[in-house]
Length: 212
Image (cartoon, rainbow, N blue to C red; front, side):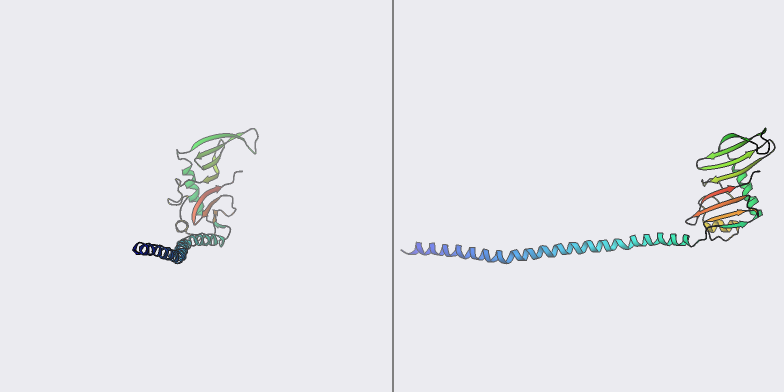
């Protein structure tokens, strides 16, 4: 007679206990989930820090190498002048040979003679890419008075050109250098070859001559 009520009571009691257990689990599990999320987040941040630390030394070493090069160049004196008549003669001969290269295009300009205004001389401009050679021509003679060599196709002393290392330059010219601007010329400095270095390589080769 009382069995149905007894079973109902048991069902009711089990439901109450189930809800209580679920509430207890939620109260305990949710904080644990929150703690787990924090741990994962912290691990991700630490991983990013490690990766950034692995990259930084490379960047620093690159900047350090650039600074070292700049400091080395800052320690060089502004320029050096060498009076080397034999070497000057060889360089001048090579420049005259270069001026005969068929690579160059020619432009002529009339020029009034300084000593006799009735005479018209000629300025010759040879051009190839970024390289230019200027010469002065009269009725009786012709002389190169200026040049700027910026292309590596043109060689002096069989091995010196734009891009040549400083060590090779010193070996071929038999001079020791301590500047980024090396001048080789005569005593009066009226005929001068100028070798400009950058990062211990020849950047430009220039020539300055005198025409009366």
